[in-house]
Image (cartoon, chains in turn cyan, blue):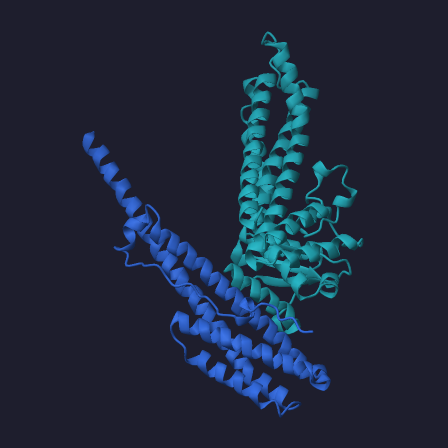
Length: 298
Length: 183
């Protein structure tokens, strides 16, 4: 499949997954109403509200927040003219404004992009990646990061985090109500027992399902960024060989926090992930294979 | 009641017209902006050439024909104005610069000089910027031309005075030439 096909497919799948998230929230609300009765009606907006407030702040200030969380330092053009030249190339290819550029002092090769929109975008590189990669490889990595900016992935992951957060808060609140026997209308003559068991099951499983959906969205956005990167450079070989460098390298970025693992080009956590289903990135070998297929089209 | 429905329909039709018209104008402006970007990058490259030629001359003074080719191509590139002329001159200059760098290959002292290395990096990034600005321009032209030719925007093209635009096609002899085999 060429990059246009890849982009369309990944966009479609993201929308499908976000709809899945919406359906999940609706199911949890329905289960709560079935199990506890009308007294829980107010809980859904409260949970969504809490999640929204907690995620929105970090979304809005993502460029500054991530700087402190990763220890990245902003640099100017005179600090690294070659890197700035490479980034300017991709801004011309993509029509994006010039992002802020930062360096993380870490020998593990990695890079990330963040910021709430194009005008507040920030891309950062570890010193390791700048040392390990040649011009074409670095160009591919920059294109991948700017593709995240062009595809508004900070927003997409904020939406996913909000919904997953709301579901977690919701099911947590409802579970507590259950233990303390609070909400349940004892007077109501039970209702359908099968429906009750079913509702309980939904409340227990929903948070796990939400995390799975969130990871799946993150993986689709990574594949989309790879395809968009090729749309910018028209050179799948550059990004492919960059990913091969990352694949060979076994060092991992020393993170201060696991909560931003998903923003790096190569996930610092996925090696430890219990299963592929919880991974924030598609397996690197799979990404290389997709890019190789694009190369053979040229 | 009927009046409201009629007015509503008229409002929707007007909104639709405005949207089509604006889309065409926006696409046309994007092409202009993309064109301006090509000119900026070509100018950057033209400005870089004197330094580069000087730096090579210092080590390889007798390669006069190569320098002449670059200087002529640069002069043509800086005076061209239409899309086709600019593209042709751009192709020639790219070719001439390739020749200059090939000459430099034969002088190890030159290749090792710090000044030349930084010029070479600057030329590499500038060549890429020129190529990407061409690609961006052509993508914008493609989108505009599709809009001018397809329903419903094609009905508004005449009214908005937006017409198809010319692609920026660089004649690069190296792309067409079959690889020569020597024994």
